[in-house]
Length: 186
Image 1 (cartoon, rainbow, N blue to C red):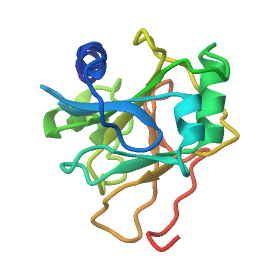
Image 2: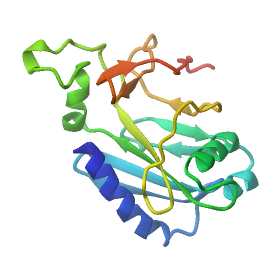
Image 3: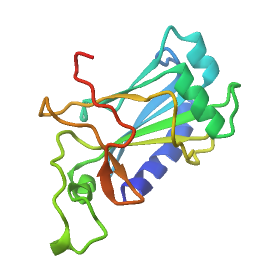
Image 4: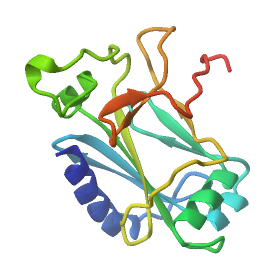
């Protein structure tokens, strides 16, 4: 449900992005769309626009989530290469969906494929979950794995000792593989 809502929001955002004129440094445009699964922010970036900026692009996931992403030039170049866009001015779309309580409820246990009574309670969610997708200019997803340049995320958590993790769709479990948790001072 959340993935379909995010896909629809990206298609709507593509239409709206063509009508944006004032974008933050490093971005071609940014729009926010409300969906049944929660708010979706879609930002359009290009290697050229980010190289003209004075540092990384800062993209908010919306006030509801308190989350933001920092996209560096090196990271965007890696993503553009993975998406077949090369280093030119091809647009890369970044969508950040803040999952509402209903959409996030399936992530509260480690194995969503198990029967309800057999599910093991996962570590407690300490922030609102977000879904991040990188896409080509036509809206199709870019499969990104094993990046050498990190993507920096800032999450608003209710516990200073919380650990960052991501939902591994192939194992239907939370994973910290490849993730480094830093305190807000770092």
